[in-house]
Image (tube, rainbow, N blue to C red):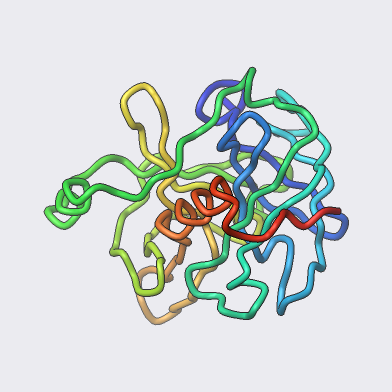
Length: 220
């Protein structure tokens, strides 16, 4: 039900030329994939609006976009591990809907996955084969933490799911552990290699921004 948490914190990120998925991580901040906004060092799809809980033409809240921030590594062409972006909203819709935390897995959680257990990994977004409908996975198979700040999983994700959160329940809140980036198609194997940007670099960028140690957001 996209009107209820945690799904209402996830939404449709509309740009001038395309669309992706994003998730609220603050009252007026959305986390998404960097390639939804810029590629090859060029901003080619600046976001214009975020529609939370969007489904079949309806939404629970919407806001125009006032700006965004991309990691310098992504703009410099160093794609691995830096495919994430922060989008800033005109309206603090998260004050009403809530938002998710962002943090990597703990060593205990990683050990649990290695043992075939671990918290259920959830995901939701706007796959191109279900236009305008929020679809999701309630228990994504965890494969491994890959190189270059990536998380490898076997969720059923497609174009349009870019920027969607992979998250777990954390007490009475929800924690984003990765943001969907791309699929490495492997037709000769049982599953494609789905790659998400892991939370480590995302958290580091958030801390740098909070400390004023990185560039100012790129404005529309």
